[in-house]
Image (cartoon, rainbow, N blue to C red):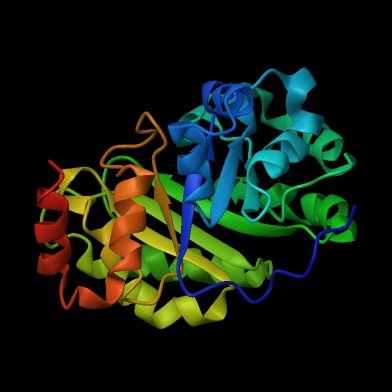
Length: 260
């Protein structure tokens, strides 16, 4: 089944990550806190690397049944980027993508790491007939890249004509995320989906405030945090529902402090 055109994304998209436990719990109890968490998200990221490979072709349909109004991002995250898929098995991913994309239901987006752009064209050939588009991601668990490094990242993603860009980088101080905000202000308009936020304690406010600076994509946790500094989806939903009340990053920090 070909998915609808998703080129016009909402202004702010909250993404929740789907794990085997979360999916099974929601299927077992359709009216449950887990299901409410899933349905609170605008988009759901199916972390294929967390599931048995034999289940991959059917995962999109299972998630669609629980949260029919949520767009999907399909991800096979490599270990070096914080995932579970072995780095030395990266060459095996294209056939696995194919198994996902030949199913009845498929994600609207696929996530491909920046250092795997050599696979971009082949992945597009598989994805385009299904109306599935690509978001190119980068994860830096040590630091936030320099302005020059961020500029080069945007150029790389634009060069291959990907429709989405995501960068999550470790914040090591209260001013670190300013570079990400400046990056968003300059580049977000060039992509249909765009995320640029900091990880870690000092990066927490950026998961919300980045949406003020031009980004339209952010991530929250369902049950267990999957990344340093990740905020649960219900808190994120409350923040986004009252987003216009935040006049500064400090206002976001004050809001988050209420939940700690």
